[in-house]
Image (cartoon, rainbow, N blue to C red; front, side, top):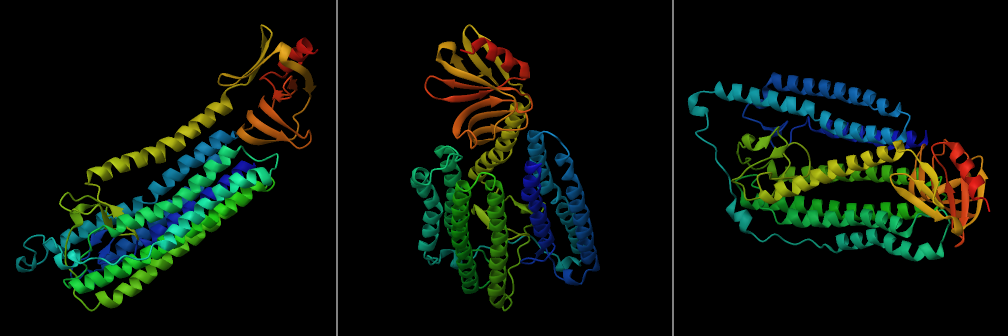
Length: 471
């Protein structure tokens, strides 16, 4: 039940975040609506309001469907299936909530074609005009101080350094192995440096031509770059705060770790959304006072935007461009290096999580066995886990019920516990391979002082073996 509560509390905010982001897409942005460039006279079109109304109605229905669908994985009994189901639900919800936007983009495109075809021939465009603001593109862009971002990245990596020292000073028996905690802390800390990398890539892009005035274009670009730099700096520091929270959660009592980690993650998510919204509000407010005084550059490049969200233009030298519908930047999918990067990213995003889910399902549904063959006690689960020779067994005690043990590293599910565990009641570490649902269990001490807690799919296996090997 605990794993279901944790998954529900941690996964359901994804639906709320996606719903809020999709609701934001219904607004006009830089002369475009639903990824389609607005045309002259579009503001007075009643059909545009109808498209907005249909979009919000379909978005509400899709969100409600996803909410109801989220309860299906929680009805499953096995924790591995619950995790796999919630993972699949998350990917489905992210894609499904974008479906109304795609429909609205198609409706807007059809309406635009109808309106342009109805114009007199002399008012129609003779052809597409690709704007390149040479003056603005050639001006040296001022460098913003990046010391704050570097400091935030160092701050985010310090918990991994602190853990290396604390692991010996603040040593608790229930702590995971050092490499496990270091991997977690270094992974989170590394995210902070991705914001610095993103900002550097953003700064190398060609300045966008908002208007026909190069000075205005340069000024607006400097404003946007300044605010994006502040956002990247703040995000790096917030990732550092999250990592310090994780360090503290690792060292508290193990029963509180999931709840503290979940609370820290939720707080980070809320603060991140607030930072992004505040950054965009400042960008729009600062840019508006310059752009509203100049005629906007007219460039109809709808054909380069797939579904109004994905940019594909072989004639554009830029690797990154500003999103047409949402906030932030997107990549030019026509670039070879972007295609390779996206292929790798999607492989990591999809194959790694579902590969882990498949491994968890295999772990939970593979039976545990305990055998005594040719003078060797063998515990098996997906291969031989532990092998103890008869002469190395110092004592073997039969336990009718599972002792209070907490995982340090390994697997801890309803049908299998395997790996390194610690028992507060026994005040010792155990190497464990049991099915908790099938007592009794065999507690074995070898001649080196290591303790094992072993069991099989049939509880009588442990009883029979204990009678054989009892010194």
